[in-house]
Amino acid sequence: MKKLLPLLAAVLPLGATAQDFPNKSIRVLVSFAPGGVVDTSTRIVTSKITEALGWHFVVDNRPGANGFIGAAAAAKANPDGYTLLSAHTGEFAVNPVMFKSLPYDPEKTFEPVIMLSDAPMLIVVNIQSPINSVKELIAAARAKPGAITFGSPGTGSVNHMASEWLAAAAGVKMTHVPYKGGAPAVVAVATNDVTFTVAGMPGVSPHLQGKRVKVLGITTAKRSPLVPDYATAQEMGVAGVDASIWVGFFVPKGTPAAAINKLYAASADALKRPEVKERLAVVGGAEAVATASAAFNARIASDIERYKKVAQQVGIKPE
Image (cartoon, rainbow, N blue to C red; front, side, top):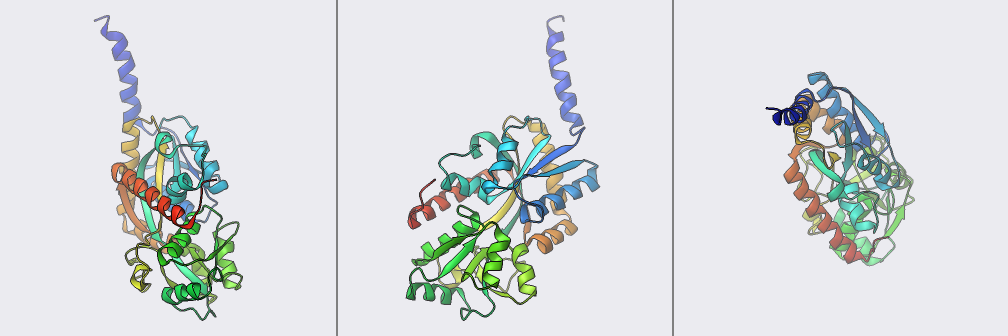
């Protein structure tokens, strides 16, 4: 019996901790500024969890450096379930392709909890542009190699790579113009400083409503039920393009499985709610997906391989 006492003392607190989780605030590190697709998706889901279960979340925005700042902070956090990283395609599928050295290892440092949402990107030109379809965009690029310019939130952003994917798949040369964020890149299209940009719905919507830009199509392989009238690049003859912006929750490796399971269950339940689906669609232009850890891991691995191929095709080498 004496030999069993230390074992019981060790086991019981762990069981109690797992059962009681969470018993304090959960910090959610967001690698982007408030108002973007990652931030809005995070706040929509965590607010619903709070409403349903009473859990308390503190959203901590750490924007900058292609998501490095937020991801690096999360990587250093105690793996106890009380720190989440809310991240998107860029930090986990594009950064490993674009940069030789990262302040975190996407595979070894983090455990995926759940993919919250997935959204197409829109291919957008100025409202006065003579270009009215992806076919015409590609034809213009083919007629004058390098003359067609595209803006992005910066070199190595998922928007940048989606545009390069479009060019590579079409076999044309376009000129990249980096900006300090997605909003300035869309503004550059609205003011005719660049020919087009690839951007998420939140950044495009105000300019669509103001009739400053128009949408040529979307970057996903299938049409989105959220914007069913927009054709895919593939439908317009550019085979293979399938780029989207997904958002998901991650925890540091070593986080107890019980905590991960509770976080997944709470998030998945929130994503089933019609009001959450509607808000993700309206605010973020995204579909609620609730993809579990194993399938989420597989998606990340697949995206990495596809962006590697794009980088090789267009001659981009890791910095």
